[in-house]
Length: 187
Image 1 (cartoon, helix red, strand yellow):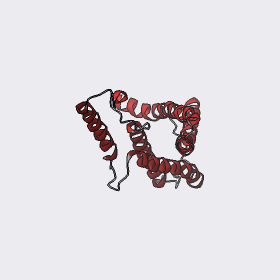
Image 2 (cartoon, one colour):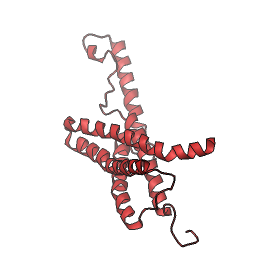
Image 3 (spheres, helix red, strand yellow):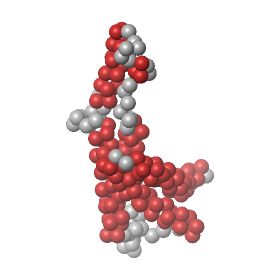
């Protein structure tokens, strides 16, 4: 609070929700990019196995395949027996929940006044990038859930496109929020 009793800046609850979202999204993208959706552990040369390979070669291919499958099962990041696909799903549900809660909480808690350092154009950019990010916090995990639950690859372009849109909006968001801080420190 200022001396006039006017609230300045975001509330602690809004900051906590923001940074929980940042952590959940970072974890979600990390796990998502580590995830092998094909589950393909067939080593090179597997297509020749059977009558076209020796017993020693067949055993070598089997060992490679088993090692790959064991690595896929060894991603027990939370100690709760989650494999990467389950962890990705859990994080997606978390991001989806945060994506729904954050705009609702903004309605309740309100927003602080605009920084006086922002021009009208920068304010519009901040406004629209925040809206895009909040929307994409729902679209990315929701399209992923639909993709997984239906098994229909027709949803893949939407899911990937939403990722790209998210990174574009994130870059715009970071440029408007970090540029003033960096410039102040440089002067």
